[in-house]
Image (cartoon, each protein chain N blue to C red):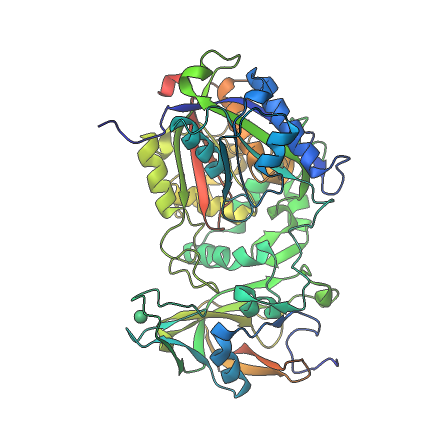
Length: 394
Length: 148
Ligand SMILES: [Zn+2]
């Protein structure tokens, strides 16, 4: 019996994105942004958009697959898939779901994408304004706990207090993203550098570990990747980027109500990371470049620890800017600027950056990377992560 | 609606929907008692309210009064107002409290007292019932105060 795996079976043949805008500044409607990103990914792959036969997304994307298929005159829709869960927890899962559809021959040519126009629709950073809070929120909102930052803050407080991790570790993550954005013309924060003084002087969003620059932006735009069978990718214009490993989900009762997850001080990756490494047949030391979703810098720390990229004990020493930069880093991190400084495209921009790094045409190009990792939105549930590699890793 | 100085947070925040699955809890708080789910199948407490026991899958979930005492499991001090009612209010403290007397279930509330006070994980706290009699329907929140 052949091994059940996605390792090496599918590849990302095309990537695309729109111009990235500050939230509310897109001149285009959200659906139009989605169309632009899909067409850009097809163009990049050298594939006629009418040949696309599937769409996978996450975070309750409003640009639904049948509507996209109709607008683009797609001949036949064979796969439409929405991954449960909020925010960017599903970014890697959407790519994996596209890959699973392709590998199982349910579809041949699947787009994984995300589109967001928060001027047209509501923002994330403020609580819902209804009079009565229902479900879990009945036990949270009356106490002023409503925003994503607040939902995650107590996980970070507990983890960092327990392990004696200093806020400078989080500061290094923020400085790294902003540093990389300064040489990325796509980045919303290009031309807006961040230094230690500016970080330390920034206002508290939440004590004890969330200053303004520890929190992601909110942006308008769209991003997309095109996933095809590995064999087909070899005949297309770009060097294929192979999917080596993918995992999604959450550990035991990570979604328990009212902050009752047994393993609370977690980004919810313990089992996901185990499954990711198992499929990829690789380990933390094999990763040449890491894109780790920053909804908040604390989540990057937790996600890195849970994937074994750094131990909690080493975090204070390891998480310094020199170790994270594309040119000097032992572990280059968020080389395009990430959610903090390139664009908050719910992590899809990180998948595109991982592909650029492996193709060798990133704006902050790491030297000859073979394995890239994307850690999706931490601390929500379900979460997901992804390992991509060049042909040499197959 | 008048501001009530005995309330931790200003008026105007969402009221809790007192849904059927959680009704004994809300009725308990009105009477100054902390009442949470306790499975009749396996005898264990669980929180928040669910339709089934996550341990033994019994649907026979009873309710039991538990000691209104706990210890701080984690905390945060939000500064950024996430709701119009909090504009200009300034920082406040949210605590996650674990109840050793009830299988270590956790509850979220505000910490009473100086909003800038130092908060220590592990600190012993006791419940303080905060009635919102002016609301329709009225409800009572459970807040926490450091003991000793
Ligand atoms: Zn039970």
